[in-house]
Image: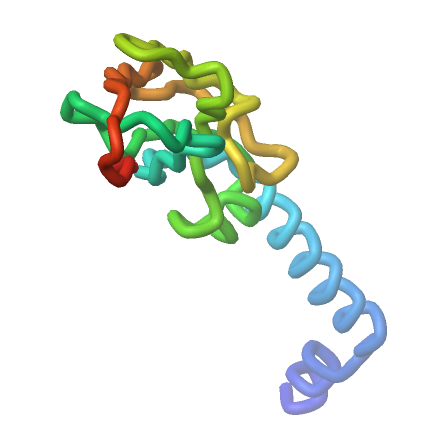
Length: 136
């Protein structure tokens, strides 16, 4: 009986060690390949803001994104790594509506899909300033 138990654990130890490594590699492949969906709130950043303008409406300063991707990639994301950038180079006085899409989202890692953007538009109402310091 003692010989049987010794043979069970120690006999052919190379194959048993290989089986343990193979099972770990397979487990890691399956676990990291799972698709995960998360909601993350990211800040809105205004680029090229006109110097002679100020915002007169209550503008949103964050957007909620629903992202999907492999678990290992999603786990590496942080709120600070993503930003929604709006280029205001062509902004005019009055109402400006900007649609948010994938090209506005900076810091997105390859392999992550955007399922939803909420809100998908940002409305910014601008007014000219005369001698005042512009607000952002």
